Amino acid sequence: MDKKTQFKFRFLLGVLIIGGVFFLSFRYLMKGPPFLKVLAIGLVIGTCYFVVQDLINKNKNNKEEL
Image 1 (cartoon, rainbow, N blue to C red):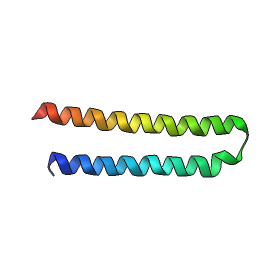
Image 2: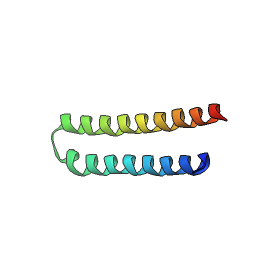
Image 3: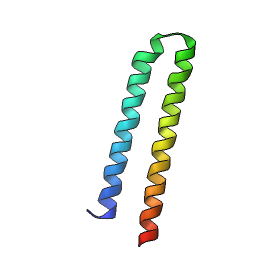
Image 4: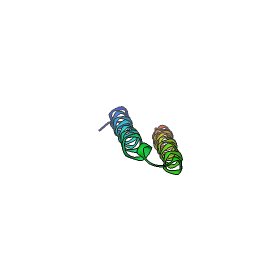
């Protein structure tokens, strides 16, 4: 698998992870008290941060190998 296809696969997987966390957090956690709503928003933000950070690091490592 070449680097471009590998990045596309990782990007698609990241989008699915972020979408799943977004769906679950707003579907189930937004029905609760305000504390859980803040935790749901923090969960979405944290997941987005870590997925994007992982994509950037993997892409940077791939460029260094070339």
